[in-house]
Image (cartoon, rainbow, N blue to C red; front, side, top):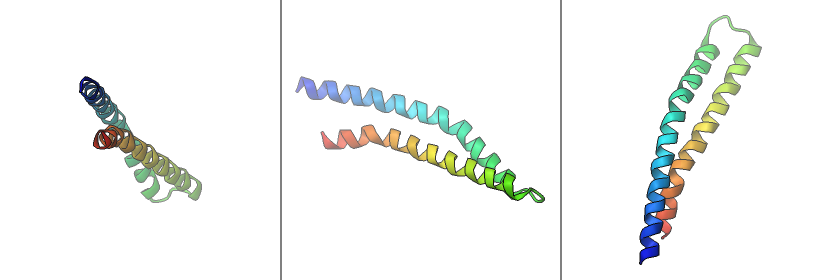
Length: 81
């Protein structure tokens, strides 16, 4: 029983850490993604610049998905205990 309680406490700590990291990373990341959209939608921009903006958006969204998985991981472990 004591091991289960210790595991729960560790998972809770990991979950809090992951949530804090997610918040701190997601705020500037959303700014980067939004600026990518601004550049992509700017009238008069050349094709190369728009392509770079598309890549910025795609990779930003990839990072956001990784962060979501990081936050979800401790919850998934807790459900399997």
